[in-house]
Structures are given as structure tokens and as C-alpha cells.
Length: 124
Image (tube, rainbow, N blue to C red):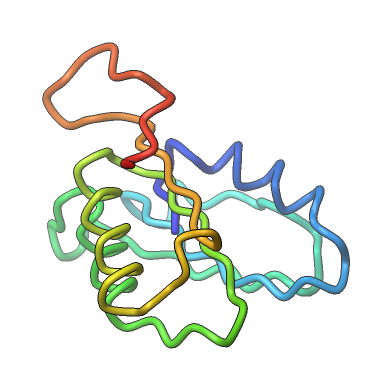
């Protein structure tokens, strides 16, 4: 679960995953113009979430997605987006979706209304 700030990192991660890993990537962006080719991996399913048509707040579409996820046994999640949304998504995945803490990595890449937000914000 990422927003446009994490797309470069998502692409790097995808390029370094073993070929047998199945990946569903939910990427929240303003609109279709922000979609980019992240990876040539055939086992990656990228699902683009567009904020502009619904005037959604940053991170809100990712949060809705987190609440509706059905995670298979052993699934791992990487969340990288606006810091406040990341914390709420983290809470949902741990408490509502029962994801094991060791299978979750979170990063708050930026914070709405703040400048110079630390890029090491992990929400822990």
C-alpha cells in the first residue's frame, strides 16, 4: 500500500523480489496521469487508486483498501505513504486484519502540513 511518494521505492523492491513471489500493489495517486510502469514482473498486480475523481484526502483510499483486504496466511505488507494515514493503516492491519507485526513494514514518507518530516518515521 503506497502513495506516489513511495513509487520509486516500490519499484526497487519489486525488482529485487524473487520471481515466485505473488504481489498485489495498491498505489494511491492523484489520477491516471501519475501512473508509471513499476516493474516487468509477471507476478505483480498493480491496482491504481485515483484520489481526484472523489476528491479523497491523501491516504484515505489506501485506508479503505486496508480495511477490505483479505490477507492469505503468511502475507507480508509494506505501507509507505503520508504519516498519519500510515499510522491508521498500520493499526487496521494489526488490529482488524490480524496481521502479525513481524510481517508488516511501515514508513511515513511525508506528513500533511509539515515540512522536513523525517523519512525514518516507521509508526512504531
